Length: 200
Image (cartoon, rainbow, N blue to C red; front, side, top):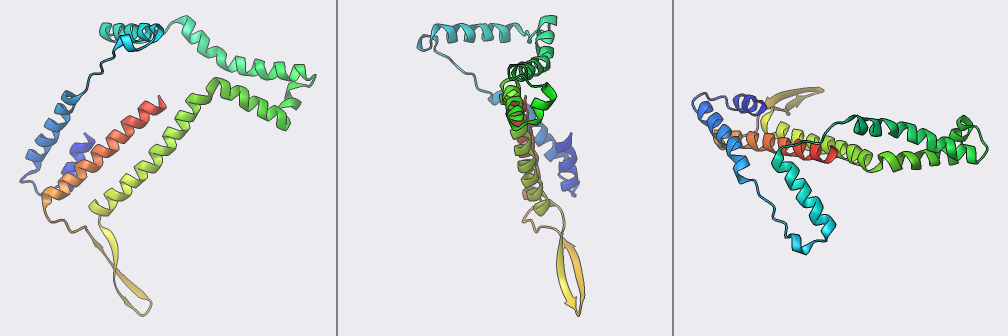
């Protein structure tokens, strides 16, 4: 939908808008046809990996998603309690009250290390993925703004008065402008999907 709106906004000429829209729709529909399959030679891997690959293939073929059970929910709900218990056990071992222990540099480091043990890799992927998405999205937006939004340009200056005009990028053809808009949107969509995969 965002792509359709962007193509409509960028293409002021109504003559080719429907053809371009249909072309973009056909492109988006046909992209999944290029999906690759992965072949794993089970004789080249150890038995544990082969077992896990076969189990995952069976799960994918059956269409089952990971089951949400009471045990799984309870396991994840215990993570915070486990962090608190680990810090309390460390403080008890040092014969110090927990609140006083957390205020010390060693207590902060211990809490950080225990929390990192439970949340570390996932936390890093969430923070890193979010920062990367913000930076790369900003670059895509900057590029889109340069080519598709009118830029403020100084025309003349008389004494201390400055006169500005808004000028659009000079495209050689309307098709090039539309193609550029579509490429910007596709790159943004691919970036967002990639970052979601990293974060989740």
